[in-house]
Amino acid sequence: MYVEAQLSGVTRKVGRTERFLAQAWHVDERELSQNVAPYLVHTLDAYFNALVIEELRDEGAENIVAIHDSWFVPRFVLDWNEKAFRFYRRLGAKPAKQWVLTRLSGKPLRALAAQKRI
Image (cartoon, rainbow, N blue to C red; front, top):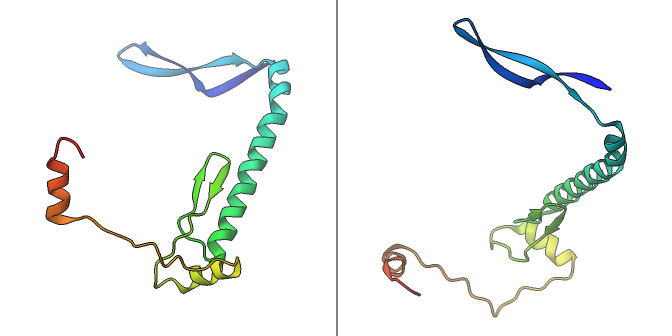
């Protein structure tokens, strides 16, 4: 089987201008038939993960981390985000009072950056 491809080709100088000349390329039917199922499964898996992430976002989850075909929802919430608080409370989560958020900025951050080692 041969397929004419509009994007496959070479650029050749014809006279004073360069022209793109499309070239036919060969499709290996056996290889294609062996790859259809894995490609389909991967596509469906990616679509399902997108739906899960969208639902988590709609329910109030923030900071969703998605890598390839998996996702992770870190359990921290900004104090003003009541929708996120409700989301985690419905799951049974309780605030972790022992955690303290610290921030390094300005002059102390510049001083740390200037050090050769930490």
